[in-house]
Amino acid sequence: MQDSHGRTVDYLRLSVTDLCNYRCRYCMAPDGVEKRSHQEILSVEECVEIGAAAAACGVKKIRLTGGEPLVRRGILDICRGLRAIPELEELCLTTNGSLLPALALPLREAGVDRLNISLDTLLPDRFSSITRLGRLEEALAGIRAAEAAGFQNLKLDTVLIGGFNDDEIQDFVNLTVDHPWEIRFIELMPMGPCADWERDCFLPGQTVLQKVPALEKITSQGVARRYRLPGSAGTVGLISPLSRNFCGECRRIRVTADGKLKGCLHSRGEISLRGLHGAALETAVRKGILQKPRQHHLEDRPSDTPRNMNQIGG
Ligand code: SAM
Ligand code: SF4
Image (cartoon, rainbow, N blue to C red):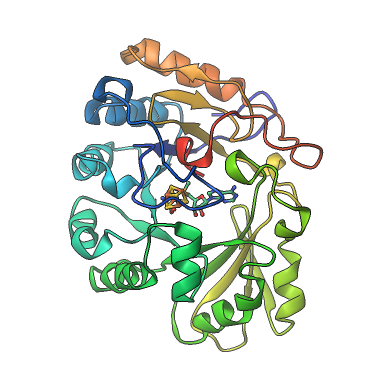
C-alpha cells in the first residue's frame, strides 16, 4: 500500500532479537544489552503473525535482522512460518555470518531466498578490533558455507569508516573480479555508540568511486547505486543514506524485536503491535505505513531514535 507521501511500502525489516554474539563498536556498547525476559521479545508465532499482517498490507519482501538473527532460538521456525505466507515473494536475512557454517543449509531448507553477510574488513586484527568478539575466519567460513548451501547473489555489506577501512576499498572491490558477489559499501550513520564519533569517520559513498575510478555504472537496485569493474563476476553497490538521501524512494517499514513498528529507522515514532491479532494487527500496520515520516534529518543532527542499531536491525 502507499504511505501518505505517495511511496509504495512493500518491504518489512523484522528484527527477531536484539542480542548478538559480536559487539561492533559503532553498533553496540561493550557490555552488550541487558538480557530481557522471553515475554518482552516477539514469540515465533507473533513474528509470523506480523509478517502475515504486513503481507496483507502489500509487503512482498521480508528481511530478518537483529541483533544477530542466527542467535535467536526458533529462527528456523520463524523462517518456515514466514515462507508459508502466500503473498510473500522474497525472504531474506542479514547476518554477521559467524553461525552460517551450522545454519546455512537449514536456512536454505527453511525457505530463505537470499543472504546479506556483513564484513567490514579483510584483515584479522581489524576484524577482532571492530567486532570486539569476532574472528575474521568465522565470517569467511560463513560465506563459504552460504555458497555451499546454494545461496546465490550473496551481498557483502561493508560499513565505510574513515580511518578504519577506507584503505581496504580497492581490496574489497577486487573480490568482485572472481566472485559473483555484490560488495555493498554503506555510509556509517550517526546513532548510538557512533553518534558522536569524529566527522572524519563518516565517509561519503563517493569515496569508493574516487579510490576505484575503473568502476563503471550499471543499473541501480532499490536504494543501491551499482557499479562493476569491466569483465568482473560481481558488482559493487553504494548505499548512501547521508550524502544521497534516498528517503523519497524508501519502501520500508521496520518492526523491532520487542514488537514496535517504526516507519523510519531514525524517528522516535513507534507503534506497539504486541497483543494485537487479526484485523486489529492489520489496522495497526496500516496506521504505521500511513504515518511513515517523509524523511530523516541526519544531514542536520544525529539520529532521533534513542535505540542503538542492534535494537532496530539496520
Ligand atoms: N547482526 C547482523 C549483521 O551484522 O549483519 C544484522 C544486524 S546489523 C544491526 C545490520 C547491519 O547494520 C550491519 O551490516 C551493520 O554493519 C549495520 N550497521 C550497524 N550500525 C550501523 C551504523 N551506525 N551505520 C550504518 N550501518 C550500521
Ligand atoms: Fe551484532 Fe550486527 Fe551489531 Fe555487529 S552490527 S554488533 S554483528 S548486530
